Image (tube, rainbow, N blue to C red; front, side):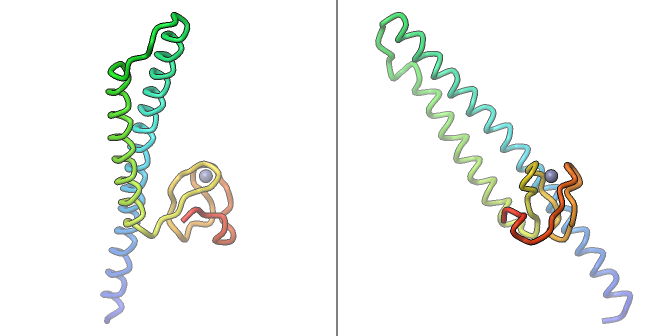
Length: 123
Ligand SMILES: [Zn+2]
């Protein structure tokens, strides 16, 4: 391989890496949104339980079945995204702030945490 070919290969490898970090962060952002929605549904179910208990009326399954179904769908979607994140591979997560960074980065660009030994990372 000529120097120029090696150079081109190196550039495209770096490009792919950057692309997967962007994609991983996009999936994580999506998962944060889904997790927020789950939390709101839990909150709504808790409120239902509180109000029915306070008024001493039974809580019917039909009142929260829709919430439960939506939570299960969201959880499955989060799992799918996590799998995709794992497949995208060569990126790691900052333990301090959760930002996904390239595996060979030494400092977190978001919070400035130092990535020393590999133990600093969540795989
Ligand atoms: Zn960080």
